[in-house]
Image 1: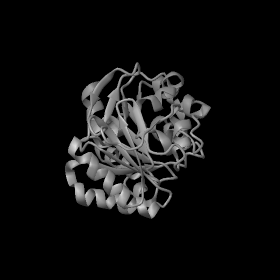
Image 2: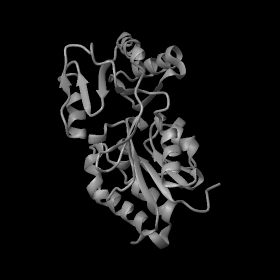
Image 3: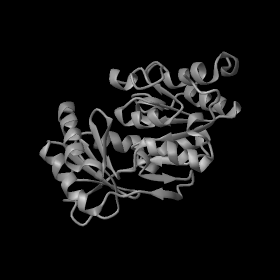
Length: 274
């Protein structure tokens, strides 16, 4: 059953708010504007670093906290840190080793900095284009184990990413949150850095009951926020498992699924405009 009123929409970014080419469409921008006109706040959460979402602030007129690293680092629109959760220093090496043993490449994020071992490795160039800044290339991650917000395992072997995800959950348990933000990315963050806790944070920060929060996403790491919100919407490009966890399903991010969800599920024809 849907709640009587929605006061906030919390959206994932990649695979949801933007297209496969990482484009924010005019229709998506217009949909967010119509939410504001209807008195509904809008917020974003992503596995991206904060700087990787800064290009959304102006076109979407964001005023709410921005939840980066799946909630591991929450910042204001001016990039002032509101809350930060770091992976325990002693867990960094075991996590890196687990990913390496599974055949995954590894990235490491500390605050605003992104570290990689090889600038030519898979997805590095694409990620740099997406987040609009370049990584720092290092020979190894020694000396970088303190203050880590997120570790990413990267591979185009999706089965290997699946195996590493299960291994991280089995071996590290509740000491971290391990979830896939893309089929080729395994994100490991602080145990409380997950999108379910983003819903809880925004509920408290904005004084909005979780029942009056709607969420929309496409990946397994979005299911945690589905479970905490009053209304959940899965993208059409989500897996069957993710879609089954949502109250509603829209079309894919290549078919204006985000805008359609706002227009048809949240606003309805009277408020959606032409």
